[in-house]
Length: 129
Image (cartoon, rainbow, N blue to C red; front, side, top):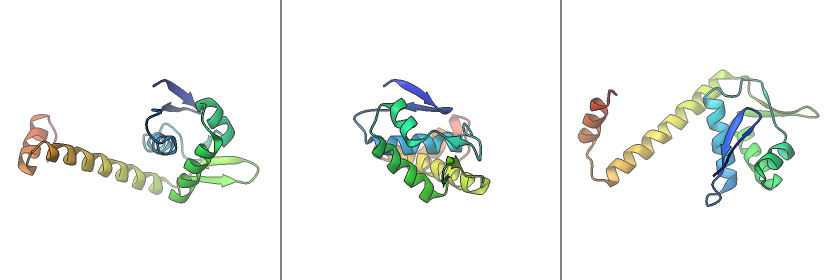
């Protein structure tokens, strides 16, 4: 997996996973982490596809999903921009955190840990449960 930086965003694509989902997830993550500023223009579909060496239709699909989420907006003749709505970004950031927690809990559950054991592990690592 090679890391590529496109328009201030870091991409590391794994060819064994659906590319559209990876582009979508990595752009969402960049927005949530503040690596891309609110209102900032992102690379065109063509620029992104060329930089990542993937099909433009794959990038287009990810961009359409970002627009449906309200994270981007396309301005005719100008390009695609990150939303200026900080609340939308906050909600996506929170949703990504919930998904990470769900994955974490599912993984520990599959290892046979009870909720109280998980809480004890988190407390021992300095977290609060």
